[in-house]
Every structure is written in structure tokens, then in C-alpha cells.
Length: 65
Image (tube, rainbow, N blue to C red; front, side):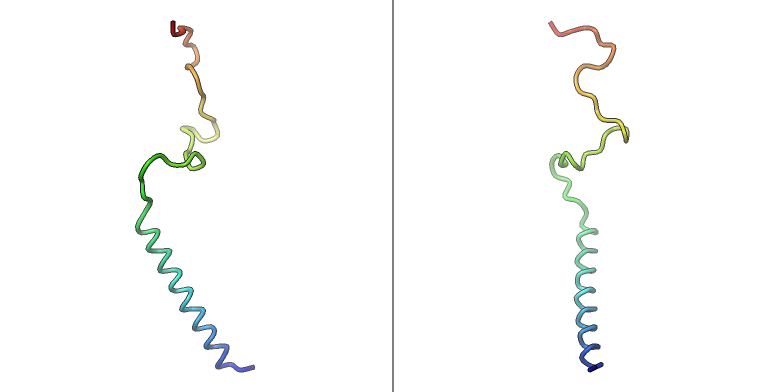
């Protein structure tokens, strides 16, 4: 086993990991764009576990004429 070669490869891998971590930290620090409506899969219901209802509210017997 060539220990010098193994150490060199490990140092190179650590450099790549450090670069990747810094890039991810910059992305997180920039925050979300915040433009437009979020995708449907990201939108959270008003009350977790309860799907949003569509149509007229309950008890509203008046129909549009």
C-alpha cells in the first residue's frame, strides 16, 4: 500500500467536500426566490391533516341566482 498516495487522494476528497459544503451554505444563505405562487406540492393546507374544501361553505343555503 502506498500511504502517500492514499493521503493525497483523501486530501483531494476533503477539498471537494469543503467546496461543496461552502456552495450549499451560500445557497441556503441566499434564501428562496419568493417570486410567484409556490408549486402545488409545496403549498401546505391551512390545517395539517385536513384537506382544503372546495365550493360553497357549509350551511350556506343561498344559491347564486
